[in-house]
Amino acid sequence: MHRAGYPLPAPVQREVAVASGGSIYLAGGLDASNASADGVFRLDPANGNLAALGSLPHTVHDATGAVIGNRLFVFGGGASSVGDLVQTFGLRTYRSSVAGHLPHPLADLASASIGGTVYLVGGYDGKTPQGTVYATTDGRSFRRVAELPVPVRYPAVTVAGGRIVVAGGISANGPVDKIWSVDPASGAVAQIGRLPSPLSQAAAFTLGGVPYVAGGLAIPGGPTDRVVAIDVARKKASASGSLPLAFADAGVATIGDRVWLLGGWNGQTLSQVSIAALALVRPSAPAPTPSPTSSAQASDASARPFAGLMEMADRGNNRLLVVNAQKQIVWRYPSPSLPAPPSRFYFPDDAFWVHGGHAILVNEEENDVIAEIAYPSGRWLWSYGTAGVAGSSHGLLHQPDDVYPYRGGGVVVADALNCRILFFGPHGRPTRQIGQTGNCTPRLPATVGYPNGDTPLPNGDILVSEINGGRIDRVSAYGRVKWSLRVPGIAVPSDPQRLADGTYLAVDYQTPGRVVRFTSGGRVLWSYGPASGRGMLQHPSLGAPLPNGLVAVCDDYGHRVVLIDPKTDRIVWQYGRQNRPGRRGGLIRYPDGLDLLLPGGVIPLHVDFPSDATTQGRP
Image (cartoon, rainbow, N blue to C red; front, side, top):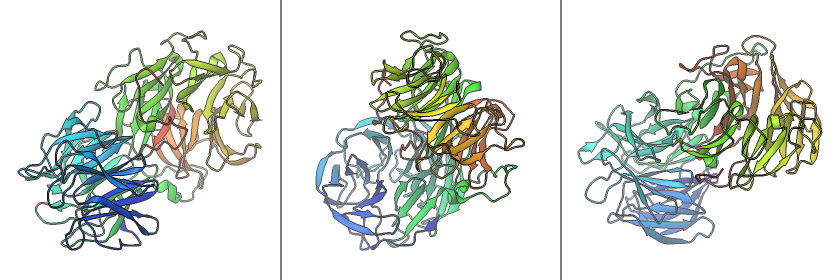
């Protein structure tokens, strides 16, 4: 945690702070004279430039807020008294209005967003602390989701692993040290630990899948500079660094893997701005594992393995795992705590986040089924194919590989042993295909040579890898070949991906395996493929370029998922142990798929569905 290179132009505390589109919006709060404010401002977090946009209809502090669509919503809060107003400010029109009312007056509340839903937590109605958790998608209608075991005002609230984490606050009997987890799907509330001491008016945020609580009013004592990390799996909270100074009542906003704490109070109203970055405040990271091909130091990108959550298809254990950068499992499927799948869950070969992280698409390759599973509830939303029955007629698949979301709300899958690329519409039925069913001759667009990869691009093109012929192709939505390559160093191509700079990445599914970055003209720009030792890959099935420059690889027969720094050719992070297949103690078996979910529901590695809604019976 460090100070930003700029302060706010004026001190403020207890304001609303919300990040959207790379900017931070500030509204209301208390100024240096303890007067309630109504201004709305836009902060450029890169340089501290603050632009006045307008004002709310009413002055307010101790409110909470969120961006829904193109409008900033400010929920409740107080001025001369506790209010129930929902005020809104257009981020394009700069017009403000009263959009509606809360179920009852609330101030001192907190909020968190999951996809398109805003959850309001706790608060104060002017008489007593409140324990209800409300949900809203439009800022006007509210439904009760859960009830905290102890009603609190001024709780610290964030989201981790699809659940709402609530820490501390002030109850009717004073400040509390309890940490709760709220499942927004079921409404179940569980205590997951205790803070080192009772705490209120702190900031909460999540980095790398780990919830943190920073600052606040500690009891006994006053403002604290302590940062606490919450280990959800172990139900334990521990110190994890400190703020540049002690304060409470700061606004908090997250953009990517950085968090801004704005203003606050430590005996006087503050104008300070502090920044938390994953590399600075996360618990100690695993030591980099050197590759035999390089002795150079890891790059800056490798200091932060990844932000958010990584999903893995643990094929040999017939399960999906979601882990954070600290290698903690935050979700697994199937699980005794989740609804059972309708048929055996077997051989999950690839799996991808969809709907902004609200669901996961999975193909069970040797089970001949593709499915969509809600996250984190585990509800079975949609499937196609019959478990254990291979075929090519309607309702059947044969070795489906790489089921991806596709534009228009459907999916696309490489139906490998049927030698076709099969497209589904938004209602979950096949609509067309590339290739001739059963003809595995590599002669696109008429026939496809045993496809094991079908990565969609934003414009509707598909990157196809053909085992027969050893080619990687870019084809249009209807199969017209735009280019076709045998990439040097790749004999058995698997799962090609496109990088942001227009180059491509693919792996060679052999032992020793190889990861190759190349151009559409076939020029190799980077290649990783140690022939022995700890860096050697064994039948890698997928290589994916992460936003921080690292390359994530499923090392299938090495029984691990690794992150490679292409600047140094070093493995800087891995999940699992090389050549040690297993199910417990951080071990996996034949991992064959992975995907990344960034904070805020951002899915950076492939196209996503345009909606955060998950509908039963549709992909």
